Image (tube, rainbow, N blue to C red; front, side, top):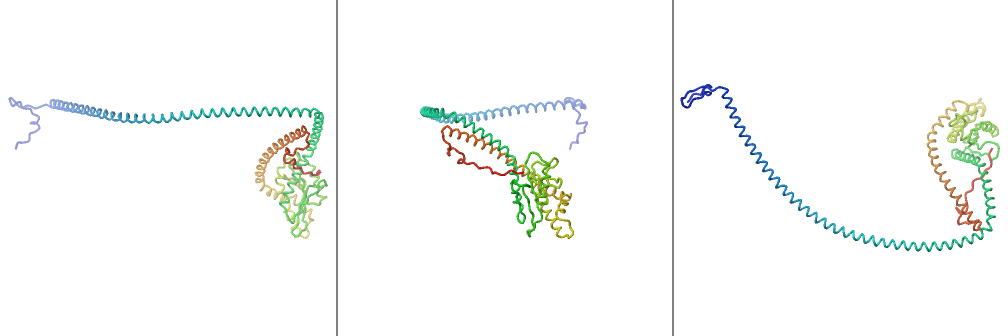
Length: 402
């Protein structure tokens, strides 16, 4: 075996002619290595460029083939769409022609109808003119003689209407007060049954409007509550003295004034000089509290031997702060629900008032028209033209209250 050459032998170069050996320097070695590396890299770069050009050429050919195929498909689809468009256009053209023909026939028909209507209107107009002319001639001949009488009658009627309106205005305040009185009395009758009794004071008689007589289950009279209703624009302090006198005459225990306008500083109810003042919204609740108080006092009186008389017991208790607090608790418990109910009632009342005003205006206008026609035609009554068969609901007539 040949011995492994040493590093010095590997780096030595031998002359082919004289066989002389000499060492190869590192610089020469590096130069030779760089040359070999550059040659190899150059070859690799040329080979890479050649491959890239071949790939680009192949890709270009493939792309041109694909584009050609897509172009053929698009041309085929376009040709198919053109055929479909031609077929649809033919159908549409035929439909348009039919519509044009229908429009033409419709226009001709409308012209014929308008012409016929004009002819009818002209005939009706001519007939109406002849009829109106004959009617005017007949009425003119008659109204010339009656014109003076008609103006005189109209003047008398106007005076009567003015007088009636004046009387209505005078009685409206009294009528409003009677409405409040009736509503409150109905509420008492619905709330208090046997053994209690609602006693109405006759119209025109001296005293309050009504009284609630409270009885025991055995029918024994325990006490009375006197009610006075007032529906006015302002509060009158003289009412307190008046109801005090009514309490003495009627031998009642408690006096209550139900008023739409309360004294200054009073919102819902209060006690002034021994008399209870309340608004209509809480008057019924106050009546319940007063009744329970009278029953309780009567029960306590029966249990005590040396108790003061009934009137003094009631008077002292009604003036006490304990009773006022009890009344306030009861009334406040229902005020919120009552206020909500009043809001709903007011909304409906405004709606009803507007409708009632419209009906009143229409009725008045129609009544004037009927009267005018009756005067011109010299007919006193025309039942066919009267609203509701010529009858109207009459307002209830009630006597004056003090």
